[in-house]
Length: 434
Image (cartoon, rainbow, N blue to C red; front, side, top):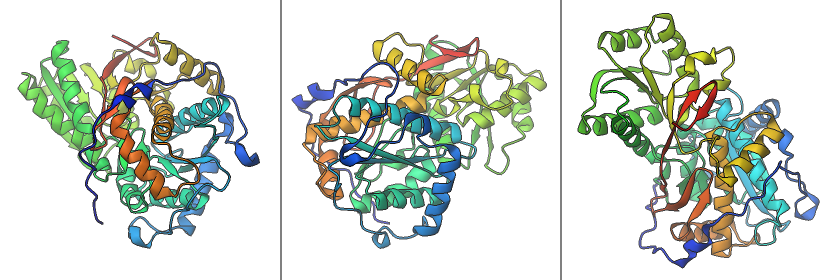
């Protein structure tokens, strides 16, 4: 498929002053959208059972992932109801379901807040989410289902491999796409795609810098998923940056999607090599297994993960005491004392009875970024998808947004976000700022 180069030559302007968010505190509220249609209630934004059914239906009715973008059904031309229709997708079932569920909920809180405050430029938001089960083909099916519904802006996907598959299709449609959490640099090769999260290279470099600057360890072991572009991309830049900072990589062991239940060999090699810290750039399910198996063999290095480990405290049947002292790099800390974070955490806890993870914060920010871009560009609901997409693409490098995951977030013409990374450590079963 044809890749589109990022629009170059866009200059930053005084519109950056428009980036300050206005978010309401308290619990999320259900608000009616224009035309008598209600946004999905926060409590039932995308239950796993309904999301799985939607995805299954979509897989029967929409083109497969390898269908060419040119053959995909044309995008709807406008929102007939005078509302902005925002669609999103990610896994609400399967091994990465914590991520997708968090994205559903975080985005829903933002939608409810914005609608309660009068909408975007006086227009309400309609919001719909599809389960893609962290699968590339199902992600394209989910995107096409949302497009048939009338989606004008796409907040997705949640994970990297599905996002790469969808990006070519959305580019052909001219659809503006912003992913909360798909972090590979490959995700933003098309000019219509922007990220809320850090790219994988940035996560790898920032992790090495944090470890070195805080003198957490000098002898480093690595376990990573060589079959996953997210994991291998972070590992590559971590190694490069770590070596330049004097970190000694004493073991560097891979696994694949077909061998992610037994990490005894990788752990034994790290232990024998004297690793003081084990760097684990992969997802929380595998991380919980690594921590359990390391404990069983008496191997107790410092463990350090990245944003994919967020959610480990909610893994079913995992002894969360084994995560005590684990570090992870993340742009969001739920214990932060700023008003925006405290308001969001309170609203999320009121609605869902739990503390939000980074993916929920990413999605919340994504919806407010869309709001800021629409208002700065002057886009209206009656615009065609590609006309709205062009307007938002053009304005993104000129805006600055203060959000949960970063202050003064900006975007360059590549679609990558600029913001400061943060680290948290798990203490007494909660994320805290070191």
